[in-house]
Length: 309
Ligand SMILES: [Zn+2]
Image (cartoon, rainbow, N blue to C red; front, side, top):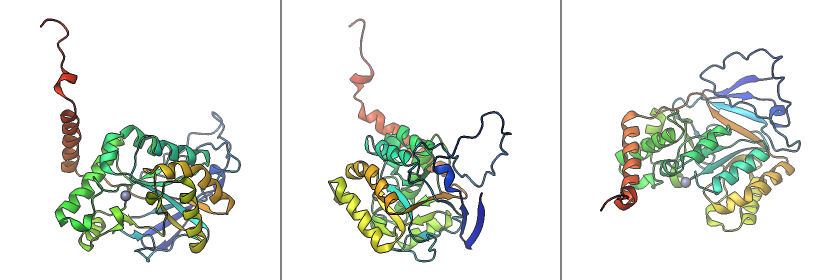
């Protein structure tokens, strides 16, 4: 059920049947032969059973060859117009965060659909169990720097450190796994020298086609109205949202329902080749996370005299 067509040097797309996302029956447990091992270079997520016959689902799975660091999102990068009319890519930034990220994950699972996450390294270090849930649900996990600084205001080396520490932290949080080869610059500010660096690292850079501006909103209705209005104007696009934001977490169930009712179709983006963290940065992050935890605990909470004087 899968056909592959190359639309550009940097992108290959595979069209997955919508059936798996839309109430596909589970394969017979013992009658079917063991599936051939999937090629290591194509980590297409395992289809999950969907109990919602009216789910938004996933219309296509698009595999991106990130060699040379292609850019996506028409706000900044216009080379690859890979979405068809009414197709959308759901992206969520700044997590993982207790309460909010799990709420977004539940809404996505209820609609049998998939998204692309750009977690912050420090948040991944604080809440690795939540980031593991994101990956386990089959979503794509990229990275979004270590501490979400505006990289256009840092030196080139500081910018590279932020990028690499972010990748290392996400990798550690996922259990020392490679990371999706997708990166989003904080506030979408990408200085040219760092775009050169992400290209060398074969990281695709994601800007956006439409920014929900959800970080400015308190009420879920505002987030829904913002996304639907901008989509009406554009007809399709990569949507920038934040699983970190409470209003977005609350809006997610209704928003996904509205997207389905309005005829939008979700495209799930996966990377052809994941990115490996650099060892020196993994060491650096482990030291910082460990060091931070030590300094956060007063000695009296660690060592207590329970017998004697
Ligand atoms: Zn952000």
